[in-house]
Amino acid sequence: MSNITIFGQGNMGKAIQSVFEAAGQTVNFIGKEADGVVGDIAVLAVPYGAVESIAANYKEALAGKIVIDITNPVNFDNMDELVTPAGSSAAEEIAKLLPESTIVKGFNTIFAANIASRKVGENQGAVQLASDDEEAKVRVAKMIEAGGLATVDAGSLKRSRELEAMGFLAITLAVREQISWVGGYALVK
Image (cartoon, rainbow, N blue to C red):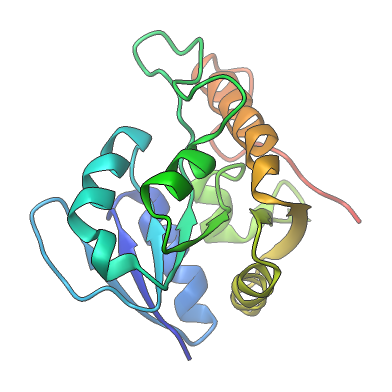
């Protein structure tokens, strides 16, 4: 069993909590104004803009741990661009901020309601995972699958660039009411 700490108590954080608890894991939260003990896996269920502060405040506590980055680095001022440097991703930038942590990208291409229901339309919801650490990716995948979602190995951490572009597109489609907040991508194997 793993102890999982989720930074952020919004819709995504609570939906992810339900997955890990369904898999038999222990979950705790660390919010904006609360300190807490960081488990062996941490989930960054916060806006990308909050990550730098978390990394600075918890760098030591996150060392040697798996950090799941769910962020989509969308410029929410104009909804027309990502705020990460060209040729990079939020996950890759987080890896630079937390060099002693193992970064796994995941949960960013599926909306909170789909995580909670474990479905996208009539299909089982799927979490795409990217990481340079295969062992960490497999460990996270097993827990997600035990919690009721499918997983897909998207490859190395640099694949998070495409995952973040997919997340960005889904968000902009939902904001423009082209799809609903329970719509999104279904992966059929």
